[in-house]
Length: 198
Ligand code: GRF
Image 1: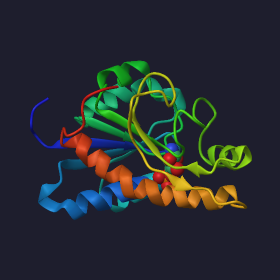
Image 2: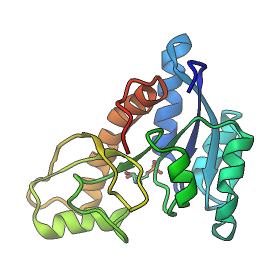
Image 3: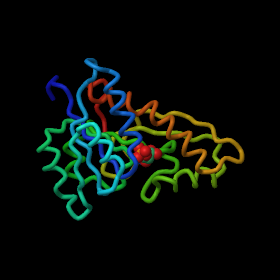
Image 4: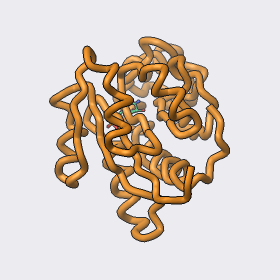
């Protein structure tokens, strides 16, 4: 890697509030930003994340699941140096994971290794947390490996679960915390301030 500014791709399947937090944080850093959001990629054509990208004149690409094998070529075409998964629900092809090892991160809405793994995403995570009677939850940011939610952990942030909390209440509190920690970690990643692992 050279010291030239990072060209970050954000992958998202949903509303893209974490994408928005990253865009806002990079804007706020101004000339101190370690790079730019150069691509937003989604497996869902109607994802709010694609709209948010277009609103910022960031290239927005819809990659349907049956064209997943084109992902590497798309990233090369946009000269992507780093990747942040933000609510992306498809498995990233192994070849792409290997190519971006140590330069691709994910945010998961629970304290891994608890409440992670295949099928544990979105609302299901918070429902499982409430059902298990956990007293604490919170986001985990980790490097992406070839297995769901198993890469090296970079940061975790604890959020209390109050007795009687619904999954919706827990989800909202965790999401707020994600918005606080994820953009900073993504900026650190792009600046080369995270120990390479994966
Ligand atoms: C977040 O809770 C994230 O942890 C999970 O998916 C959700 C995405 O939300 N992986 P948004 O699309 O960023 O609003």
